[in-house]
Length: 344
Image (cartoon, rainbow, N blue to C red):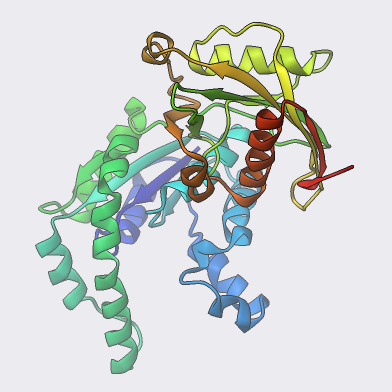
């Protein structure tokens, strides 16, 4: 298990983590910040000039998961992880990958009133005597107060909240330990095993009466997606699309779905690629839309969007696939793509 202590700078994550080690038998401190420091030593300096934070590195996010899995082969756990995580898509990617490894997460938010945070940052003691470095760290910490405030709505909905404003680190740790014992902060995410080879996946495009397409927001991976999923062994692809739509949204579709796009996705480590099919699921009436259901462990939201809106929401590979699927729907003829490029 991982006890993920979230919160902005000054909330007391590190001091609470050290106190928590005394209260959770077998626990080990796991600091992913060390992975960022390691990457800074190993990657070209130019790579860090392209990003604002090492959390923006896909390598860091993957290493967080891989290192946690490796540590749990050496220690009984839980791993106590004091790490600020304010971008929901990064939370989805990391927690979803941990769920795929069957590693449960207890997500705890250490929240502190902003006035107290500012006081703590102003009086924070640093090991180095470099005044310029101190000022830079404090400035950086203060700059993260606004992103933290922006992230609070989703953090409060996702994590168990402990208000640290008027508590000592020991008292905070005691509350966190009790929360862990009672199962608070458990992240119930669908456990989708990481692929070990090329996969065949079927997606379904559903439309409203304004011809907007339905996108869904998975809890277990970053970015918006089409309804659908991986085709199971021995299952027909179109049937898989129908099954996934029923499981994800509670919508029963006819078996005879019309193929729009067949796209070969090139392998790109750590992904294996494979065939991706998109089907036309037709137009949903207002009555059927009102009955859409979301499995909380798998999807957190759905939205009908225009093509222009979808371009801003989808990762480039999915957006390109959607773009060609919409052209195929207009022409009434399916398209064969390889790595997103039409053939013939």
